[in-house]
Every structure is written in structure tokens, then in C-alpha cells.
Length: 420
Image (cartoon, rainbow, N blue to C red; front, side, top):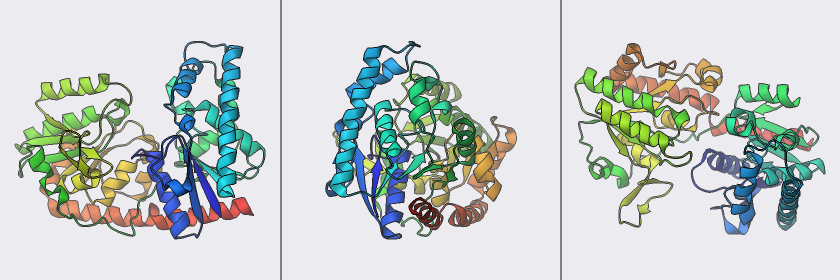
């Protein structure tokens, strides 16, 4: 089959782009299909891609509409409705060109029918689905999971397209069981749960020497405990718990502890970053804000500084923190298991319902950094044999439940069901 992936972007290291790449890998290398790409930001192969500037969620036209649709107005002006309809029509023309150009048999909308970051694009895709274009719609997070989409004048658009209540030649795919239950209750449509995965059948490559100087570059001493927070800097990541953990580990272990935060701030403003800087100062915790030096590829930045991939950083970590308050699934957690690192996890709902029951060994906190949590982290940092035992156990569980083998089985079944 010729399969078209559609989203606002397939670029960089956001979760949607990463998971789409994994799906395409399995479709092409294991199931014999060919994949093509549609989006407003693309780093995919040009000969298999259809670039549409207006499909990007941060294009000026869409940003203006988002502001109007999800602002304070509860009634929608006719002029706004007309503008949304015209924008959706223009995007539908682009999508038809994409389908025709690559003779596509199947479309895979990636999260654009779940969270309304680009309402006209969602409406355009829904129109094609209503006409009978076969689709596997991959939903990562829904509008009802984000408070900012709970007000405004877009309610009818959300009911129609985010996601659409379609089932004929249309499959809904969610990444956790709670999302599937919510979708059934709110839209009356069933879905399949396909969890996020990693290539656990092929362990990470051994360090090639490029990242050996990471500690030196940031002045982190060899005997200093390096705690890695491998996430963006947004409030739901709970980074304040990581800072508190570092403070208490310094007291308990009587060793220097450095927290390395791998991503940049700005996705949701800078107030949260400012609060973390202030907290770290109060608690005497050193933080390396490495986001401007950790990229999706190696190289040199405009100032002549060496750039690292996140995979260059993991080998240096003595411990990983993942104190998220909420996650759609938890890619960074799987990545931590992939690199066989001990980890502290806040028991966010998806972890508690879908991941924890498999029996993973982690230092688990339940919304509060207790003495037992701190002692558990300290024990794993000091006892390398125990940390290794836990890592082997976790890796084996991931091979069984979150590997490409699991994805191959799920995707093969979904395509068979859709094609009859």
C-alpha cells in the first residue's frame, strides 16, 4: 500500500514526529508498504514529501484563527466562520494534490484530529474521511485534556472533527487505555490502543567517543552525581521535584549533585523556568540548562559550541528523573529504560494504569517526594549492581510490551481490518 502521513509538522524531536517515524519504519521495512509525508514543516525525504506552508500550526493565518476561536468570545462572527471554511477548502485542495501525486491508498492523520492546534486542517481531513478516504487516525492527546480548548467559540468544530465520530473505513488509534475509554464515552466510537514503542530488539549503540567530553564541556566533575531530566521545561513535567530530590541527595550522600535539563524553555512561556531558577538558588542546587546544546543532530552552533544529541548525554547520567504530573504516554521513560538507567517516576495516571502493571522496577513517587523516595534514589546511585539488575529487568519487559515487534503486530492487524 501507499500510505500518506499527515500532520502540521514532521520535523525535530516532538513526540508526534518521533512516533510517526517509527510507524513509517515498521510499515516500510517490515510490512512492505511505502510511506509519504504531508506537513507545514518537514525534514522527510523531498521526493516523498508534499510541503504545505499553511499546514504548520504556527503559520500566521492559523495563529490568528486560533486566537479568535479559543479566546474569550463565546459567539463566532460570520466572517470568522467564512475564513475558517475558506482556509479548510484551500488545505483540502493541497491534500487532494498530495493523494493524487503519490497515488495514496490510505491516510494516517497524526494527532491533527485529536488536539485542535490547526482547526482548518482538521476540518479538511474530516471532509476527506466523510467522502470515504480510508484513514488510520493516530490520536496522542485530546482537546478535553487541555484547559485552553475548553472555552471560546469553536465547540461545533470540536464536535465535528476533534475527533470525528466516524467508523466506516476509519480507525481510531489511541496511545493509552484511558484515552480509549474517554473517546468511547464522548464520541461513541471504539478505538485500538497502540502504545508508544522503542527499538528494544536492537540495543543502543556503544558510545563512539563524540559525547565523552560532555561533562567537561559543562564543568561537571567526574565524581559529581549527574541527574538527568530529559524533558521540555513546562509545568506538567514537575521539574521542581527533581530540584528538591537533588537537594536532598546532596545532604544524604554528602556529594555534589548536578541536575542536567536537556530541553529548552519557551513552549509555554518562561514563567515556569524563572520559578525553577529561583527554587534552585534557594535550595543550593546546581542546574545545567543544556537545551541550547542538545539538538536532534550533532554539530556546531552559530557561536562555535559543540552540539550533542540526547543519546550522547544518557551514558553520563547516574540517575534519571521523570516526575511528570501528566503524560499522554511517556516517551522519555521508554528512552530511559532503553539506555538502562535507574529512574524516579511520579505515578501519573497513564503510568499507573498502563505501564506500572507490567512490573517495572522504578523509584515511584505519588505526588510527594517522601524520605523513602529519596532513600530509594540514593540506594540505586550508590549500588551499581542493583541498578544493573533493575535495568536488565526493565529492558526485558520493554522488549515484550513496547518493542517494534509489538508495533509490527498492531499495524499489520489495523491495516488488515481497514482493508477487509
